Length: 252
Image 1 (cartoon, rainbow, N blue to C red):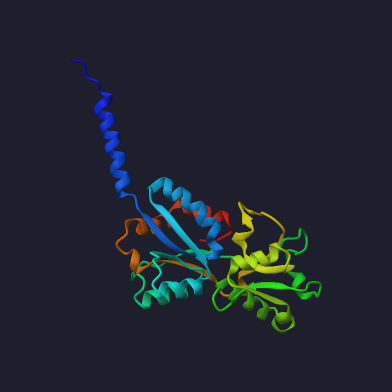
Image 2: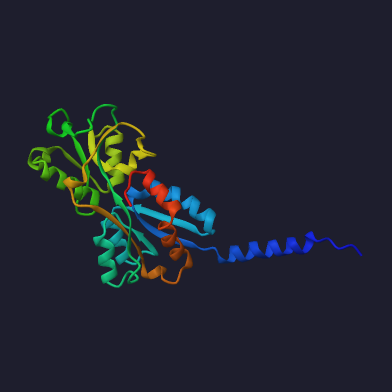
């Protein structure tokens, strides 16, 4: 009788794969629009490393908050600020003690045109443009930061007639990218990768000109019993995710 050692090994390997597949799950994530590119990069690595699938919905932080409060099936919230997750936690919609800052955002004044925006932001003080795009400051933290910059520079009143408001930071970027606004305040992560601009020209706004854009993560009540949700939050605090986050111009 011949004994083939590979047969029990193959059976064992198949059992491991089946067990891994059984343990793999999926997590529904509400994500601030500025973090779309980094999260997509992180998601592929997260899925390869853990087997869990990440399903993301992107939007303005205020809009996502409203959806969560209205019963949307999100299990993890990646906000563009720290106050909205804190509010959800205090309201009982988030798991107490699960909140942490996963990134600190950077604001940029950006134009799709090469050389149009100088690295000191002097273009803002001139009258050589018709439209300046910002995100809705009531729902988008990057939009709020943009208004704080204009106030700090004493330009709020002068530039108010030129403002074009996007529903979120993704729409704001689209206004500038399509030429509907010559320049706009966007998240640096939208136009930056691996230490350099990916297109156009930009002024990286000094952090002293606006309140810190601390972006907090929160395990939502709907995800408290989901291993995939907990695995994602743990993964976001690890070295692989940190490298991706840094590469898009965020601070940690």
